Image 1 (cartoon, rainbow over the protein chains, first blue to last red):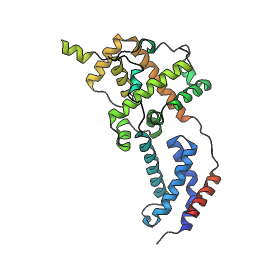
Image 2 (tube, each protein chain N blue to C red):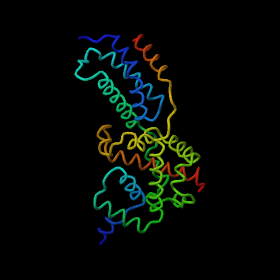
Image 3 (cartoon, chains in turn blue, orange):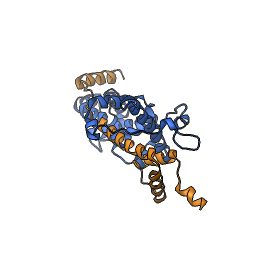
Image 4 (cartoon, rainbow over the protein chains, first blue to last red):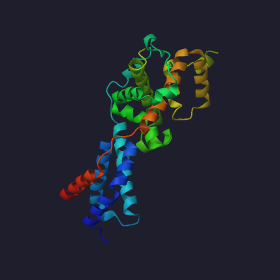
Length: 186
Length: 86
């Protein structure tokens, strides 16, 4: 039996809330999550003829949403970033040792756990994360967003494992320095 | 001997790379050994690892932070509208 526009309309009323919660959990951004849910229903409208009722509408919609989420990640991860190769020479001498001025210095005046609960510190950390190029920002968060391991993430996003941890390496170097300057005043 | 030195001694760039890789992938036996030897000799990279681990906890912590709520009813209306125009 062909599904009608009325069915889809009911699904919007019934499943938007669940789809949105899931998307928000996966991308940790409300606005983006809302867009992805909207795209999901638009895609569903186009593919309506292909829905045979083998699964429940809810399962079908979630599978479309999950594809949208992975597509979004894949696009971000494959972005080209200008001057990516220069980012390491900011920290290391040509032969690979720390630049004297960039060597990590001691941080711990405060207890680690207290610091994580300190909202001022969280604000600084967030600012530093947001200052990273989008692709780097995503890569350092993916482990926690997807709750998957490195191998699985790379497979899904179609990037090589070495590419993935080299991005994370650059991102963490920059993040560390930003926190160092803006919180520990080193 | 020279070959052995080359295998054992990493640059700080490579050492910090392994410190990050370790958080996502299993290191090989050689990599674990290389990193261990390097950290025994290098204060800066030992410090880096401690701070990197701490930042990792911070990143995880941020993901649990509450996100701004949005009005679901409003979102539904917008979607209905878009579907209608489709």
